[in-house]
Length: 490
Image 1 (cartoon, rainbow, N blue to C red):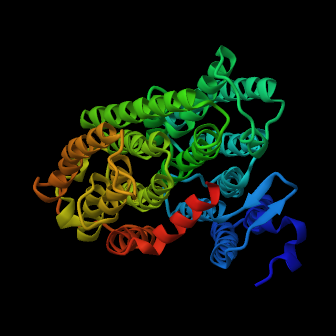
Image 2 (cartoon, rainbow, N blue to C red):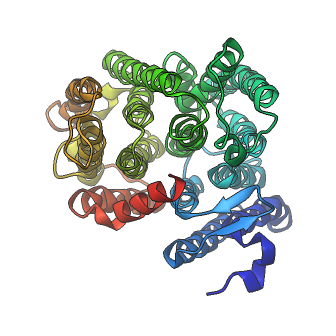
């Protein structure tokens, strides 16, 4: 289908425009109809239409540009698809969740869709300022959504912490961008990639500020302390959205700004570029290690998943050190598998909260008898996160870690030590994942009464289970597009 006849010069932003219109209409839909289910259905409809349009554009293989600031290539398409899948899963269960607000339904869905619009804007932006605008649109919407969990004082506390730390990260980011502009005279990434600059103290400060600012968004160590409190305080659909969507937006920025422009581009000299790669390697190693070690001590399932999410960000940051086309393909594929693994785990937690089950790991004792499907799904998601074959997590980790061991030409890489740390961390993570499985299948619960969960949660979890299995045995379903995306940005 030729979308230029419908969207004209703004065809590159077609999926984004559809969601933006939806975000603007949703409060009015709630105000007029007064029915939360109708608002939910409209939000789901706009998401589905946007997703279908993006899929058609992605499979078409055509590139589009809007106003020289937004470019739709395979990388944009695959990241937008990821954000749309996350949004679809979050909306699908929101109407059935007992944690979701019932007072401001229109505003809640508008914020959810608006935050996704910001992520999609980031994925195609080729200017530091437009990336900043997209990130802030997502961040400000997220601050409000975290606080909207009803009847839980932890939500207000999480919201306040998120705003304060988010404000600090914004200040660092804009300071770094201003210094880059002072040095280069431009904020355009494509213009910057043609320059050759010396690594002076001003450039070093600019890069450190930007890495720290965007490091908060992906919860990389040492900028990760907000994540456990926010994921615990927010409602499960919002925790799912932040852990699988917002974090990927930050990683998209890392790829577009630091990897493509500063490392793969010719902006810095060879020595400075290598130093930047080692900095990212150290951050990746620290992030995965701290995330996994601290997760061992957690008794709350949401906090454990939050620290696990920190560790997963560390694994994906391997691509920043390796900086090869294959590494980026593997990183994008792991982002996709992470959506279904981590998203599925948060969906199970949310479904069980609806059934009156607590958030502590000890509350999951005997779950296999009370709800065999929920226990089996949770076990699949956790084992996939740990990298157990033949699940999706094993396949994506195999691609990701192998990119650090050696390139496609078979030459051993200098990043073997980083792959070794990652493999060791995967083994550590199996301990705390297995602890949850032990509680569900081995330990005896206080009750044998069957658990009934909302049908929307069952459908969403079944979708995640399907993709965790399918992507494990048939990765080409997504990986081929990930390779096209990596080739497009390099």
